[in-house]
Image 1 (tube, helix red, strand yellow):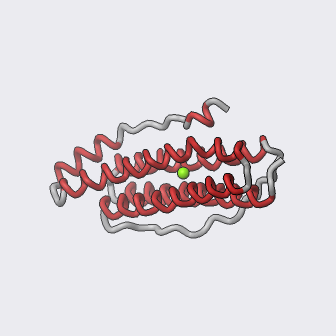
Image 2: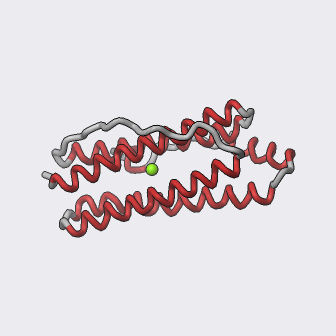
Length: 172
Ligand code: MG
């Protein structure tokens, strides 16, 4: 069994992951409309990854005999000034998610729930990757500046991103 405190915290994290998914889907839709189909593809994959994160927590809560509560998903922004603005918003959001994961980790420790703490290890590493990827794209977009050809080339590159089922879900 899982303590009510941990169950509530995981349910809150499930909601946060779905909110992330919704945010990235909104970004994908925005950039489809702007004609940046590669960037849109990148965000669509980000959307799928976030859904997978929510599913990992759902499966975990069920495996511990917990109850999954699906709360409403809050509103997300609908437009961004530029690809750079969207990736800056992505980085800021991922930094927030990192602190959520860290708080959950600290709670699992204080509750002596070592199974939950162990489950979170993958998410800790995943957040390092998320922040690094967003920062990398911010750096490149800053170099690109208002060079349309360079932006076109980056868009082409991001069009080739493919979705890989995250390991904890693939092995479930
Ligand atoms: Mg996530």
